[in-house]
Image (tube, rainbow, N blue to C red; front, side, top):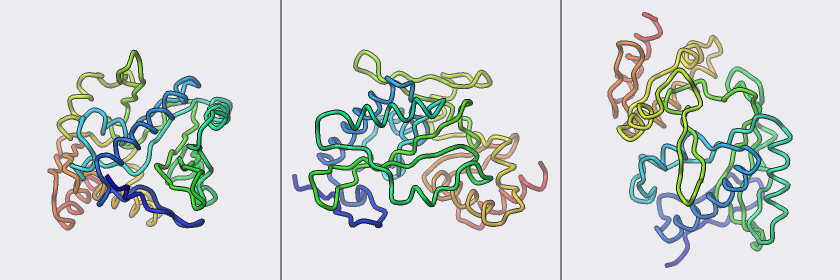
Length: 250
């Protein structure tokens, strides 16, 4: 099958064109992602977020747009683990490398928008002059688990004996319950995320509200906070009204 991977020029943010990519291409991208994560695991790196939700749903991204993920988040507990992983992976033979993203300089670490150190790398095939970006990896460095938004994001994955193994990184939640919620596309808003939505910085609060709507509600996720249930696939006005109610009453 013909590849639909788009060639990108320096300074242009791009990755796989999910709207046109074929299953053959996507399978190969998933294989390369798994190779990266196996190496990260050797340095105590743990993937979480959208990639793990994709694994648990066990569906192909090119057949279900609701489950596509834009990048892979990997948690490291310290800078040394992260640095050794990148050095070790890029020291391997082969043309697939992790290169610092052109947009790394625009990532503002330790701020209200994202209060953890984040390093963005592109997984590229360096045989091509312009370099094909297969996927973007966000390497998150934090002594504590870097999740402030939803309960389901406390699930991490590892690769053991040829299969994915899942683990909950919080004692506040039950591992099986969270896995079942991911498969049912349900999640609970955390108190910390509510405070981010309540931010007096309008740019940040707008970012979080848009992210909540575009990446979760529009993609079929039911979101709860205490007794309030935000049904999936609402129109934007109804969604904003419910968020406004939550912020007012809680």
